[in-house]
Length: 165
Image 1 (tube, one colour):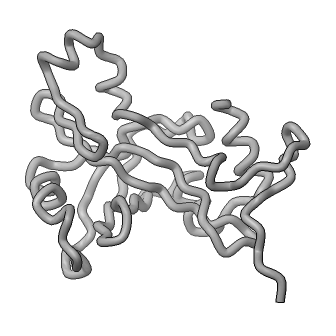
Image 2 (cartoon, one colour):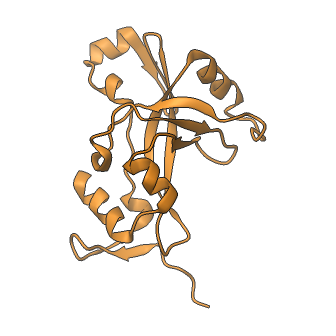
């Protein structure tokens, strides 16, 4: 049996791309990004995984979306806003080997995704993981919710990539 390839022939440009290299990732929450450098320094702090802005708390997360006819997910790298209590839980258990007993946490998407531009502050649940960044699952009926439950095509992944490339 032949191994599945993670490369796709792009319907947008005709070139071959690795799906992993086509994933979109945000470096910070949108509200933090919109601040001047001076405001960021005076009002918040950010690391590769955590961000605080005034009395708001964010964690870097992954939105997994199944790719139809593939055994892999397309992932958006995003930031999710949490309550202070849930942020503390996430921070305190970040390096724990087993977080399976922690129930999903409520959060709001803190980035506007190009494909889902009509969605702002999407409500969802954050599932803490021991082997990766937390996973975000939309809990409201929306295109994102539908895509997470029904999957997207390989052509969709190429369109997302070329929207930001």
